[in-house]
Amino acid sequence: MRSRFQMGHLVATPGALRVLESAGVLPLTLLNRHLSGDWGDLGPQDYAANERALTDGSRLLSAYSIPNNQRIWIITEAQDDEGVRNSTCILLPGEY
Image (cartoon, rainbow, N blue to C red; front, side, top):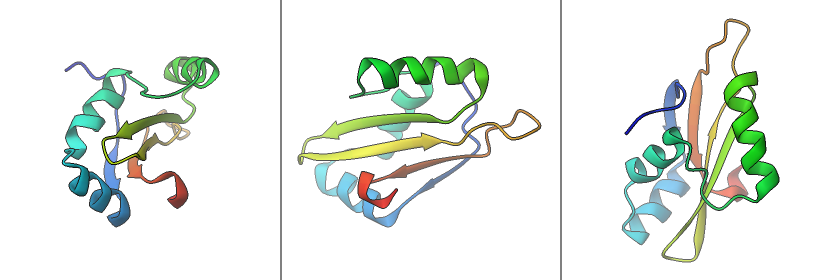
C-alpha cells in the first residue's frame, strides 16, 4: 500500500473499535484505504475536497459503510504551521 500522506499519531474511539469488532472489520483495513486515497462512501464534492486537501494541507475525511449497517469515519487533521499532519482518528459519525 502506498500512502498519499502522513497520518501522524493514530487514535480511535472506543465506540468505533467496538463497532468494528462486532462487524468483524479490522481497523487497519479501513486505515489503509484512507491512506491510499480511497475515501470510501463520499459524494463527488467531498471526494474533490480531499483531493485538494492533499495539496493545500486541509483536513481529510473518509467515510466507510461496514457490514453491520454502521458507518465509520476516519479524519486526518489539517497540516500545522510546519506542514505536518499530527493525527488521524477513527470514529463514529455521532462522536464528531
